[in-house]
Image 1 (tube, rainbow, N blue to C red):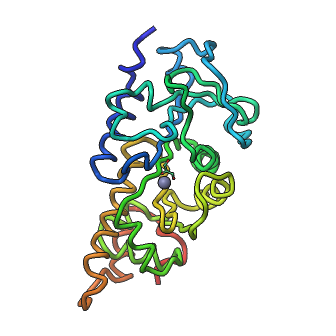
Image 2 (image 1 turned 90 degrees about the horizontal axis):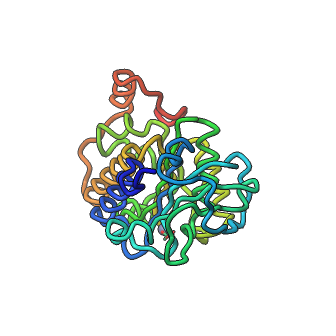
Image 3 (image 1 turned 135 degrees about the horizontal axis):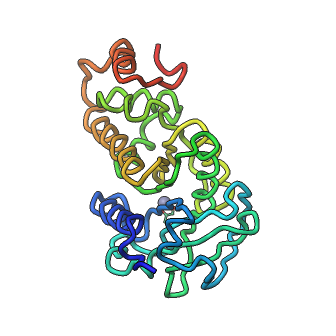
Length: 270
Ligand code: 2HA
Ligand code: ZN
């Protein structure tokens, strides 16, 4: 059996959490990440029949039955992940239609997965239904996107168009745009269901006055989605109160879409 701390999925998870903290997106215990793993990859490092303990999830997600996830722990700080991965991360397998998580590694202080586990797992199921390559769900609290939710219209088309107009790259990176949830109580199955519904049509879902969810095929891509949207939000927060002389026009956005072979969300450009 190889040392799990040398597994590429582990080293990338640790690097990503560390980098998210460095970006100031994950103060204190803010934020959470879940990464879908293949059984064959896990089996190189762990005896998949050796269940350390079982943890009830409080929800059902039949589509994820038998699936393995590396996930951040509840109450754990991203800044500490690199120093004690076995305490701050856990590797679980869902069983019982998703109602039970079997812990195979980690959470060695008796801890468990993030309080946002329902939103993560339901989002995985929603994204896998539209794209079988989806592996990652990521949540964090980037300041400029959060700030925008206080002063910008929360209409999804309007919010998306503003972000697209702030940097040339945005439309190319997230042509599906951003979906927006109004403020809701976090850590519940209800916000999980609502987030997953929004994930069916976009890989970025804003939680107003709280943060953002992102989904993608790997940790880099999922991180990059947030990074790009947050950069656009930062520019908007710098300029929104100034007299605007010019912006990216819809014609220019169409030109970008054609050149980079992406399909902007239907109805979002004139
Ligand atoms: O886990 O970010 O939304 C800490 C959070 C809750
Ligand atoms: Zn949060």
